[in-house]
Image (tube, rainbow, N blue to C red; front, side, top):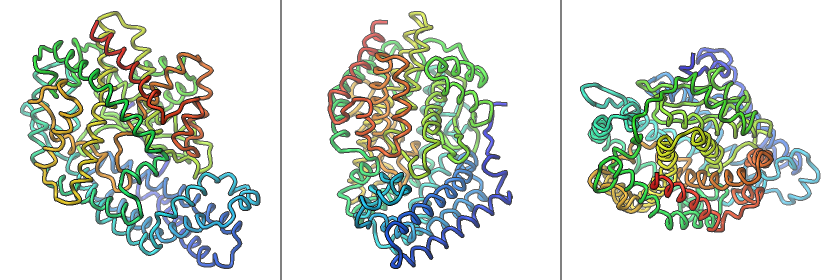
Length: 582
């Protein structure tokens, strides 16, 4: 019990007749939409729009179900060739329909009289936001044939590079203290109570990267060049401009947030230096002690104990969330422990048609691991809030995706602090601050790193040594004198999967947004009480049909105003002040 997730609600395996039936159904729907689009010249706009929406809706639901099963299976068996073959098969199916998908998007984007369509069609009215985005996106679509070629080539280009990197990192054997461990297991030792073990794990991690860094450097260069080439071909000024448009986020909001973060970096450096002093370091905090617990961590949580703790913690905040958390444990939504072939890190994946989610962690029983569960269950709660929305209205963007998860972490931290004595409070504050520092300081570092990789890879090939150098420079710029400059981590570009996507760039600043937006929301919850949660749920429910700025407006927040972000960071600074006093 409480070990591995159960995917039977999707399919019982690749030999499940339902799996092949759904592939056949998806193929049939593709053919039908192709014929429908071929005849669109003789179709009035209302019939055309309703047909496109109907086919797009049904295809999206079917493809999401198929991909969920394949990708979830792959995430815990990255070295399984049969799963990789099925993943390639689905990518080919998807790419086969890329030209028709582009044509369908263009059909919606080419509507001549949107107001007339909205008044004549209930289905179009329900999908007004989706149609308006299609009109916007048409400016960036290539020809139908070119879109098909791009989708087909990505299978053997950017996505293949990403799969190779995932395979290399998940199957890497790290020599540490006479044992061979997975990269996830070694990185988890950063939370150990034993300082010698933390340092040994850090040294082993860096040494292990030398085995794969050249191959991963090729992956990163080629992925970033593919993304840049396509962004420019589509008429974007840069990959960042494309990312912001995809995120439904204004540049003014990003600049306001990043500007506020820059002002508060010295406060975080003070936290790092103080922690370094407490751990007997004289030149700032070495990287291997970033996640060191303060004092001996005697409490270890079994999954059953983590369930009890989380349900108790969140029952007072949102009973529907606590009930969902209990289901997640009892119905095997969670794959807990690290093992060979399993992806590193943690994630949550929604299964919309089943109204459930699946969560991957590399659980080690620490409070930090419980915090990770709370984070991922926050994603699951966001999925719960949107589960009854129309299929094409459920999709929310990267920055808002990290809000519910971080809101949960903040509530868990408050709950734990209320039960703590002064010594425990210092340790819990440290736990909270190190997570916040990851979302603010390290994310700023990653944002700068990715910006530079995009810029510099356009004119030169970045070897592993170049990427190590850029990472070190970005770490020194952001962490400053808070860290010991002799003990940084130049290989952080290897272990973070977020850099290796052709469909999602800059998956870094959304974590800062989610953390600081959630800080602001949690302050509102403390001001307004339980009544705030109804507004919060409604905001989450509508994230699929709102811009980021509209999400803020629903709760009375102007996200393009630096003052909002400064207020969130000022609260973090007060926690740093208390930590330093304690």
